[in-house]
Each structure stands twice: as structure tokens, then as C-alpha cells.
Length: 192
Image (cartoon, rainbow, N blue to C red; front, side):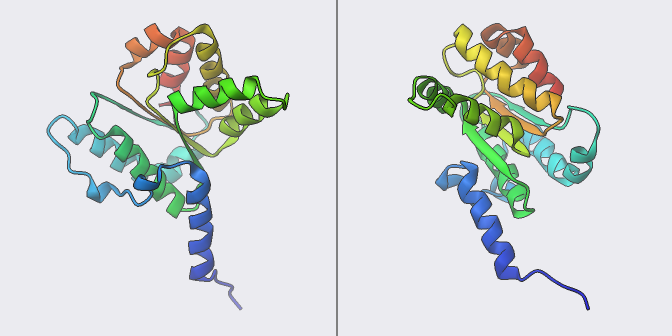
């Protein structure tokens, strides 16, 4: 006798993963096929397609370089592409956490001053352990020392644990280094 999963059960699992992911509601149905690239965004679409095609092999690698970086100008479609990749991974039952980094830093700051002494550490640990993390708008927030430290804690943990990490940014790695420090930029670069 061979057991098979019920399709409705599989759909419920994917729906729960999607709800918990943090992907904005407007982007939860995003697909690469829906992206209409211009000449400047065609390479990003190709990179995202290749990443999905090779993901199973990528996640088995014994190296931190398991990620994808989508860097470019405002309005290029980086967030939409990252959401499309995340949605496809969720359809494959891969847990994904999507965070807009300015919002993340505000949440971490609030957690730092909350009544629960563990709240900040729990939020950091969740992002450090999730199978795939998407960090949207990296380096958009004001680059204080505290922000740099929080970025490094999360990114370094993902680097040490060899976890796939996807980033979008309006900045290239040199500009990210100038805003968030060489240590953060180095780890991000090593992850992608």
C-alpha cells in the first residue's frame, strides 16, 4: 500500500505557510510569469528564475552562498520578484519569512523596550532560524549603530547556519557597506 497526501491538506499547509510568511497580502499571489521586465530588469527576472530552478540543489550546498540579491532603482520590481520567489517556495512547502527591513527595525526597537525581556531575542532568533528569509529594502532605514548591530546579528546567524537569504535593495553592496558597515555587507555578499 502506498500513502499519498490529500491535495486539500497540501493546500491548507501552503496557505498556513503563506499567512505566517509576512508577505504583503497584495503580493501573495505573485508569480514570475506575471512580471513584465524592461531592459534594465530582465537580468533580475533571469536570476530569480534560475534561483527557483536550482533551489533544491542550492539549499543542499555546504556553503553560505545560497541566496539571491535583487538590487536596483526604485520601482524596478525587486519586491514583486522577491515575493514571487517566496510564494513559489511556499507552494513547495518551504517556510519563508518576508520582512520589510524598515518595519523590522521598528519592531525590534519596540521589542527592545517591551515588558517581555525575551521579545527582542525571540524575534531575532525567528529570523535567524527560518528556512528562507526575504529582507526587502535593505539599508533603507537610518543607519545607526544599533541598526547595524541588529542587521549583523541576524545576517551573521543566517550565514553561520547556511540558510538561504534573499535581499532587495535600492543600493549595491558598496553602498550597503557605507550605510550598514563592512561586516554586514560582507555577510550579505557571502550569502548571495
